[in-house]
Image 1 (cartoon, rainbow, N blue to C red):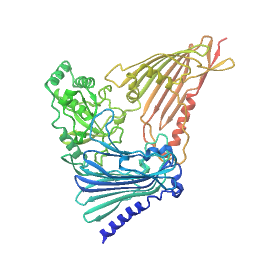
Image 2: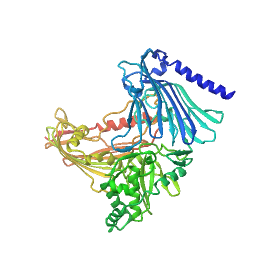
Image 3: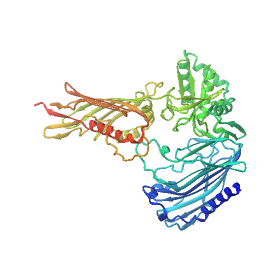
Image 4: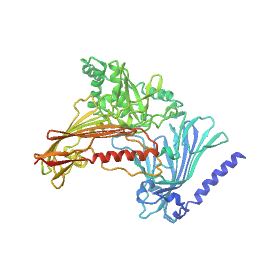
Length: 632
């Protein structure tokens, strides 16, 4: 009786959805969902049925109302598949603002194309795509499909609010799992889990309804903390003729290690080249740097995603022959070269641009990248093997300060990547400004950028000079400037540091009142605006990364003028960072120094207005002027 009752309820639900497909009148949307929303999910249903450890079927239905052009992208249907999955039963329709059907789409309207992108040489992934076009707003699109899987590594996630300004009328995720198959899941605190045992299957359901949209908030660290979501992962899997267990990170790492166990053989000519390269190296550190530079100058990155090849590296001898590979292949190739000179290293799985690996929840999908870790006796060197510019030991901000997994013979082992402090991420600048009484100036700027600020400016090493000039004219903010020269160098290839040297001319350096000249002392690195305060902010916030900027500007005053007034020293200290500025008169110069440090901690929403107050103090300090008067 319980089975019949549950199945009847499920079938009735699907039937109601089918019969109510034309009931998309925008006038029926609750007012609280319309507020600040550019898209509203009218109904979303995701139903995933696990049949065995190697097969599953997903049924998906979505109806979404597009309120303005700003959310047109939400109307596009995009679904991915590969040789281990197939999509069928595709259906779609469009309705006007009153809920009247205006178009039914045919099978031929759905595009089927390869997902191969720039930088991807081999790829099994394909996409089914349908773009909905309508000239007037609002309108509603509705589509559905089914996917069958012949092997899976993850289970679908559910995150109904995946964008700002998007509200939800109804959304649900149902997962059916045979009781002899184990899996794990994480969920947001606001969502409850309903489950029922039906004839050998456990059916889990998560749902939400009438969820208002969230407006974008500056510096937001994301909406996951305040929106409903579910992540799920099988503990055992069968994929591309391979079996594995991901109940913990140790097991997941064991599976990945087994894939790379037979792909580290180098050809004889590469071994000979390696021997010659390191012949005069005295330390392991020297050998690492030599071989890493060899990798950078002799290989290039391409993406390769072919079934199990999404996890198994191309063999080292193949990379040596073709001089290219993806992150796995290049990291594995570097590992093989280090092994040739008796230096042990470990492949590393990590999430580039993703959160840290969750120590208590092992799964695929948390990592999208591979690098190399070289644990020396007194030091650990991290190698980003896809970069042709980054020095050995520097990973970059997208993979720093995160839990990552070493792929060891004993299985996966979680460790943490280096943390780049504000002092590491420096910008040190010295500027010489020779002023004339008519407001003209000759200006020389020398700047050093470190670590994450080095990474932000690394493209200046390879940009066309014309593009460099355009960037400088757009970003420096000096009035009426004419660039004489601009050079960028990386003086030491073993350090994440770029030096910038700019020479330029400018005019209108002063404002004038009577016989006085007013000079804004902070010529370059000014805070030009302050964000507005927010009442009832919803999301936490953080800086992209912490940094420390130090500026020294030496103004040589115009002949016949002296400094009549300079502002007092300013010091601002906050949990968000520190700021100081100071002006000193010495002979016919004003020496202005400014130091700003910002931290990258995650802060709760209620502290945002305190940050605004901190910024406002810096903004006002940056506007301070010196007053110049004639000497006679």
